[in-house]
Amino acid sequence: MTIEFAVIGGTGLTAIEGLEVIHREVVHTPYGEPSGPVTHGMIEGKRIAFLARHGYTHNIPPHKVNYRANLWALKSLGVEKVVAMAAVGGITPEMKPTRLVIPDQIIDYTYGRAHTFFEEGLTDVTHIDFSWPYCPEVRNALLAAAECAKLDVVPHGTYAATQGPRLETAAEIARLERDGCDLVGMTAMPEASLARELGLCYASCAVVANWAAGKDTDEITMAEIEQNLLLGMASARALLRALVC
Ligand SMILES: CSC[C@H]1O[C@H](OP(=O)(O)O)[C@H](O)[C@@H]1O
Ligand code: HPA
Image (cartoon, rainbow, N blue to C red; front, side, top):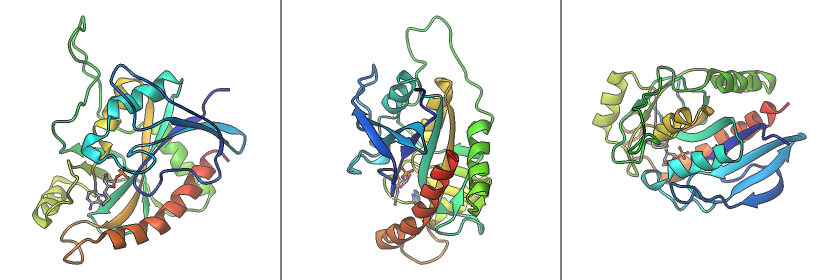
């Protein structure tokens, strides 16, 4: 049975509620070990694969995730479509805590991460097109699922990928806003470009966990993030279920 799509779960989503687990598969890759075994399961009669980006016990920080191994593992299992879940900080006024966002652009501020499969030993240098970093087919499926489940989503947004694991300064967020970013998170890159290099159709559902630094309170607390994610991820789970309806 072909895998309908894979979900990469992030902060606040280390398992999919309602997934009938078939088995967990340990996949070894030429790039090292993925964040954990891939969970194979069924929802509404459709086959899906699930991988927790930070590990099933949420112990791998964003700059230490082996993004290459994760994407390679999914590709090697025959996955073609990937939905990446992401907790983010909201920068622009629409991006209120607990909201779901289907971003359409990325600006990459990360550094020092293994970010490409195209390294030494190639016969020719490869430059992928990345004008539109999210795959329209999966984006449209997410938007249609939101409509089907009557979920309110923001259908666009530019995601700033920062290095982490610390949160940003207020001045950094002001700069990201001047750059045109609406959301900030630490994992969309190099995940999205590695997916493109492998020919995977990849898009993301972001859940706003907090107002980004300097946008609301003086301090961002983990308690606030967890509380917002509890609500936001409940909507995100409903969106994932609607993807297969
Ligand atoms: C304060 S939570 C920060 C953490 O959450 C996001 O992870 P993910 O994208 O995997 O949901 C963000 O990128 C950071 O890694
Ligand atoms: O404010 C934030 N900054 C970066 N990543 C995040 N992930 C959730 N919130 C944030």
